[in-house]
Image (tube, rainbow, N blue to C red; front, top):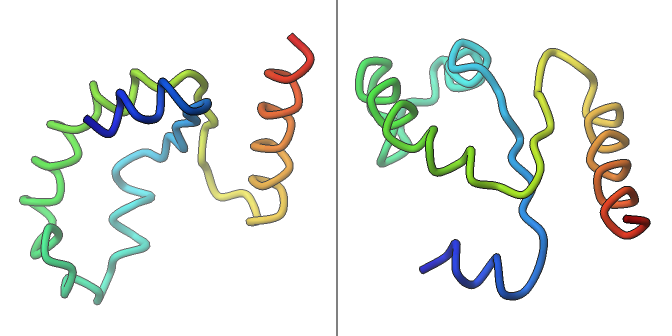
Length: 83
């Protein structure tokens, strides 16, 4: 249902971060309901990955600073408006 709303109202951008990057950001923070431990987090990541890949655009997330990532996202948005 969310994908339908997104497709009907805007452009989706997938912030594609490798699982190890996501896991490193969660260290000590497994109090999230769907991220109780690394094994369950990996299973959830694997299950959702194909759905994330349906996004209109993909921005690869590495170890770049937030402002660099924000600039990459703005470039994607700008490119979609100019297309």
